[in-house]
Image 1 (cartoon, helix red, strand yellow):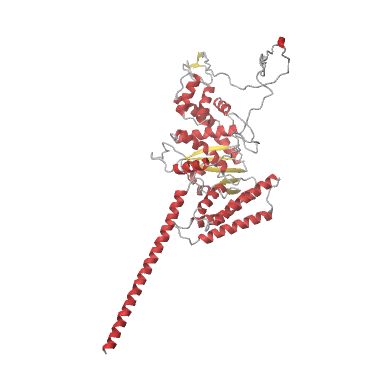
Image 2: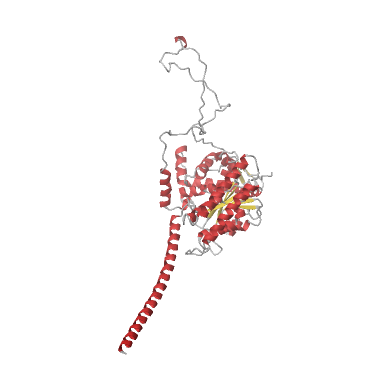
Length: 512
């Protein structure tokens, strides 16, 4: 009996031990599952943080102006790593088109230089009586400007007293002010040219002009010259003419960028209007018309208040910012900027070069489609071969479908995985991605607008900010005028002078 009891006791102990071990295993499995969950979450968060930290203008939609100092330094370092071939000479390479001056057939004057007196080879006297013989002529043209001198004109202003009411009326001259010394239209035009087209700060513009004219020039005069031009353009209906001209264009490009304004607009209660000030640019792809407008904020209402795109029925090239979507129902078609898409695709590809290989394939197919369009256009065609287009589109559809499949259930710290979000967008809006392959007049990127917006960004980089929304609006109007007038063959200085004297250049509709 004692033996049986011992065996029973050993069995109970063993069973208790096994049960304890099983319970411990369950606890460990639960802890392991929890650790796996935490590990997945932390890996996802780490990938998101690495993605955010590694995002810059080269691999995302972040504009270069918002790159961190480290990212800017990295770009400079990458550029500096270019190794010059030992056989490559400095300067322009063979075949490079020069930008030298072309001699004119109608010079302002013609002169004959004195004949050479000594031989440039041996030094022999070349005078007529010393053996020098006539060997024909050569030529040179020297283009220069006259010395800058400030001309000071004194006007006598007759005054007449009205026999009826006794009011005394004084004669007036353009830009003159009775009893005061003022600068004329050419000096005003030079101030605007330096401060606006040259992106020179107001204070520096005043200093340069004072040195150039040997006459005092204040910062107030420079600012007022810009205001005067803005007032002239407003009175002439420049913005209305620009809207009417842009409305008739078959293709427009639109974009916007944030800017710094020291004092915001206020509402009816005197409170600052919410939102970040922006500059919007709507332009033709070929730069003939470039229109800048100040926006109080990057909103649907602000874009709608431009007064142009609400009734526009042509093709619009843009990025996928949601505020632009309100115009999709009225335009003939939308081309999403493929350059933006490439940055998004690169951003996803950087997460995992193997799992996200679909992004590389998508980018390759779009590049091949662009090459095919360029080849067809060069050959004089107005459409791609249907079979070629169908094959390209099938490869694209397959790649973005895989992007959705492989990322549909992939963990991410904030909602859907970026790869899934991008692939779904590329699927849902494929017609907006591929419009350039069917309408050859539509560019495949919005680089035109992005390049145009470098102008206000450069001005901001130099000056830091605009004081008020009014000064920002004035800058936009003047820059629109000067850029578009120049692209129509008018010198900036002449365009400014014409506007200041009451005869500004105005855009006209394409159908006029």
